[in-house]
Length: 483
Image 1 (cartoon, rainbow, N blue to C red):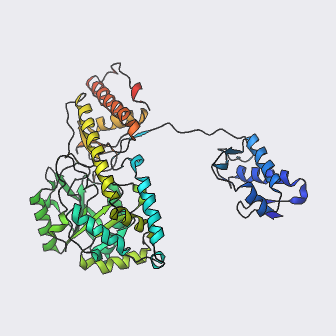
Image 2: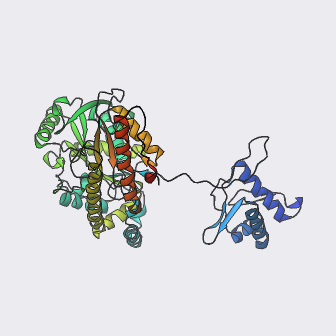
């Protein structure tokens, strides 16, 4: 028996032609699902060496399976397994052509324009980081992160967000959600059992906090942001600069009262500054952290500024929490890739991060203006929330209207999110709470933005007419908003 080191193929050389035995082994592996669709096969030379066969034998076997539809070959991308059906027991198996899902235009909040990710600058930073990295830098990293990135983040936050800290106060995490989980577990370690989160607010954050053993209580959000009279527990999670999802700013009076509560109750505030760099009508409101560094855990990340897939975040932590947080990080094995940290530090040091932020700020500002103008043509209800970030709120008359718009949008290839459909309310079953679409205007690629605007405006216009004429549709169609 001969076995491939790459593919774990087994076939009997003595059973006949080696080429035909190899073909049969590959067919069986594909049929059984051991080689899933899209898997890239080794080059013919490598596989021939592994199996002790002539290269021509492997080439002929690949060619035969390509002709039969088991494999696909394309110049520059090698040979891959075709999209096929696995063989159900007792049935005759046949290859099937690959099918692609229809395109969807994303209008979800919280997703940046991924096509604008600064690939060239990032690649340059990775190369420079690898060229200059010391041997020690590539060892197991410090739990709190590499000092070079912590120092770069300190300078950036002081300059752009008014955060007061030294590098030893900064902890590097794999994005905000991981950092929130680590902080929540640390608070629980210190005896905290309940935390207030904004209502409405992000359901995944409540899930993370509960997983850490904390009871989550609702914190009412009004026109001035989170209401200090409603705060309970021993900690609170806030989005002061641009509340998600309502888009309001936490007023100065509320800021001071929440800080006073934290000091009186020996509590902590977690400031999620998820899109603080993006303000379009004036200078961004500075971070709340500077008012009480000993009581506020400040958090930021690259998820909105660069891309969620980068998985890099930073938490500025009060001194009283640092030792316990370091222990939690070590227990969780939550250190972040040294290469990614070095690349991010380089991106900041060379000014590429700032240039990207400025470029995207102009793009998102223009898109928000266009969104507001286009919707003003079809509905008298204006967008709510300050001119900031990557989403805006379109208030609706009822939960029924919210559901109707989301369902109609899905049929037309528009991915929409609502206050009730996405679990923003602590009690989503209470339909007396406000309904709205939370419209993300950053995610569509540049070439699809006008199409997204047209589709959304027609959808809102048509739905409004259907609600005004409940006996049936009024004749308009949405064909032009289909991708």
